[in-house]
Image 1: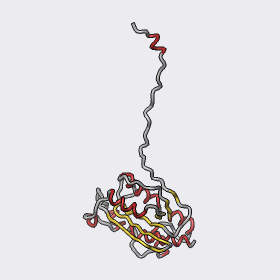
Image 2: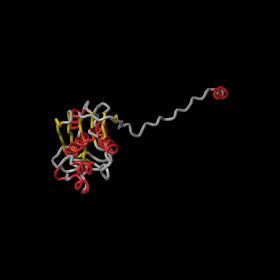
Image 3: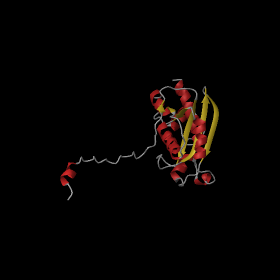
Image 4: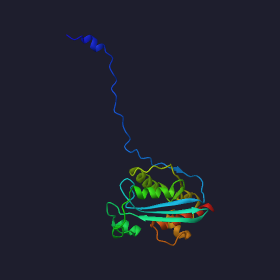
Amino acid sequence: MEDLEGIFRMPLKPVKKPSKKPKNSIDLSYTKARTITDTFVVLDFETTGLKYNENEIIQYGIVEYEKGKIINEHTEYFKPNTPISKRIERITGITNEFLQDKPTLGSSQLEYLHGLIRGKTLVAHNAPFDMKFLLNQFYLNGIQHEKFRVIDTLTFSRRLIDETPNHKLKTLKEHFDLDDGDSHNALNDCRATGNLLLLLMNR
C-alpha cells in the first residue's frame, strides 16, 4: 500500500499561469519633434480608408527639402487587394481602373521607400495617420528601421495659426496658397505640407 501520508507531505509545485502575449506587438511609436528644421522629408499616403490595420496604401508621395528648397520628389501608386470604394475615388481622384496595371505594395517597394526616408527628419500633416500606415506596413513586410523623428505640421499649425476656421491641410493650403495642385493627391499634399512647414518656421 502506498504511503499516502508521505504523498500528502510532498510540497506542492505552484501552477504556472500561461503568459499573456500582447495582441499586437507592432511598435507604432516615433519621436515627436519639438523644434522645426528647414531640412526634412515630407511623407503622405492616400489609402483605401482610415484604419491602418484594415485598409491599404494606394499612393505615397515623398518631397525632400534641403535648407528650405525642394531637392527630390517621388510618388508611387499601388493596386490594392480590395477595390477602392466610390467614396475614396471621389476624395482622391484615384480610380480602380487607373490602379489596374499598378503593382501591389510589397517588400521591394517598401525597401525603396525606406531608402528615401532613412536617417531623415520626417514631416506629415496629422502624422499619427501616416506613421501608423507606414510602421504597420514595415512590420508586416519585415522591414528593419530606426525610430523616426517626425514633425507634425497639424500640431504646430494649431499652436501658431489662428486666422483659419480649422487646421485641415486643404483649408490651410487654400488660405495660404501653399500649392496649386489637387488636394488628396499624395505628391501635391507633400508640397503643400512642406510649404506649410516653412511658413510655420517664419512664425
